[in-house]
Length: 124
Image 1 (cartoon, rainbow, N blue to C red):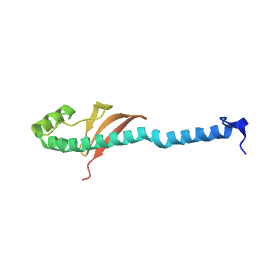
Image 2 (tube, helix red, strand yellow; image 1 turned 180 degrees about the horizontal axis):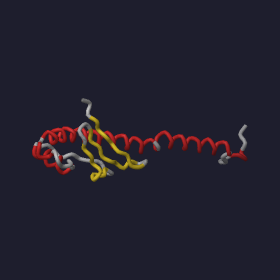
Image 3 (spheres, rainbow, N blue to C red; image 1 turned 90 degrees about the vertical axis):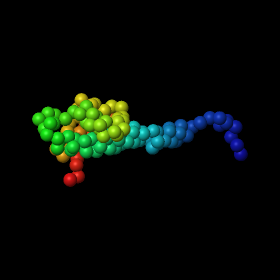
Image 4 (cartoon, rainbow, N blue to C red; image 1 turned 30 degrees about the horizontal axis):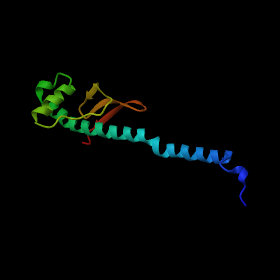
């Protein structure tokens, strides 16, 4: 038989179960979204740095650039001379932190957890 005194009432155990369902739903679905965004942003920046490395390698072979530090403006100018589409960057890239060395290029990017330096290292 049915107990009519309990109609529409919820117990503490049922509230606890609902709270657990909502917590685990958030933990599984919503919480990883920022981590996924950060991974996509890092991969996007690494692909751009890979393209820039080819330009930096070409600039390093040019004797007129040997004595000066390579900037992103130099890279963009040469990239435009090659008639390629300009590189698109995600939000949070700190362009003034760009560094080009003989075998790697790097730039600092703001992620949801803070700032990190993203580096592309040549494989050869």
